[in-house]
Image 1 (tube, rainbow, N blue to C red):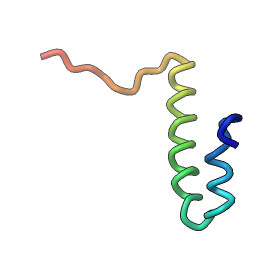
Image 2 (cartoon, rainbow, N blue to C red; image 1 turned 180 degrees about the horizontal axis):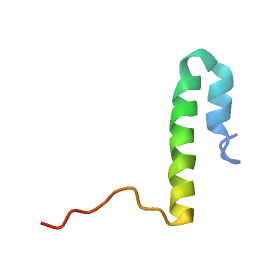
Image 3 (cartoon, helix red, strand yellow; image 1 turned 120 degrees about the horizontal axis):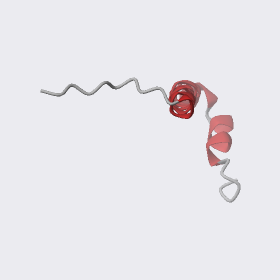
Length: 49
C-alpha cells in the first residue's frame, strides 16, 4: 500500500470510526483549494498599507 500511495486508504479501512472525518474534511479542503488554483481564483486578498 505504501508503494502505491494508498497507505491512507489502508488506515481508513482499519479504523474508519476514528479517521473518516479527518480524511473527509482535509481531502475536501484540498480539492477545493486545488480547484481554485486551477481556475486562477485568489481568495486571499493582500492589503497594501
